[in-house]
Length: 127
Ligand code: HEM
Image 1: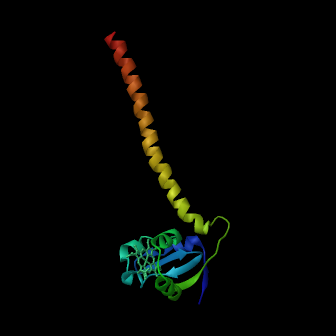
Image 2 (image 1 turned 30 degrees about the vertical axis):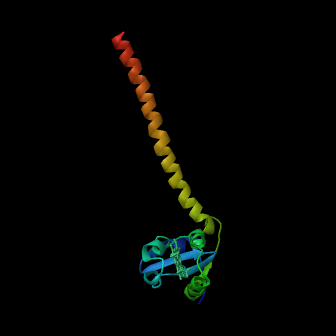
Image 3 (image 1 turned 180 degrees about the horizontal axis):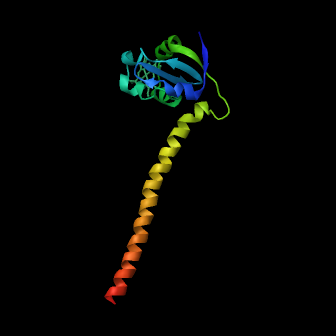
């Protein structure tokens, strides 16, 4: 029985025995299929609870894969205000990028400031 899922609901199903993923706006239950996935269980479980559209397409899955997909369909992703649905993957990546750039930028700037202060203090005492 097809059901409407919000992205938040899908993202709760992200463990091996309870795994949903989104491909092209449709929700698929991969709980039992994951261990039979020809590309390997870890790679598909990695996408559990998220929008796997890009990952699925990137692999260039065959028509056979798409036929299997149809048997796993459990519902449709309902996009609601505040529930970004398909774009959530992008949102997931964004904070990671921010964190990594602030990891590079933030402390690096702190070190430079500290180094400058250190040099100034050192010059004052050495002068
Ligand atoms: C419910 C969703 C999925 C189904 C039904 C599925 C099915 C399949 C099937 C049948 C194959 C064998 C090759 C082919 O027929 O194309 C395959 C291979 C593969 N799949 Fe998936 N797949 C799914 C999701 C994913 C996702 C989300 C990823 C990546 C994150 C992935 C990565 C791979 C890889 C790397 C291979 C091996 C490709 C190769 O050997 O050339 N699959 N998959």
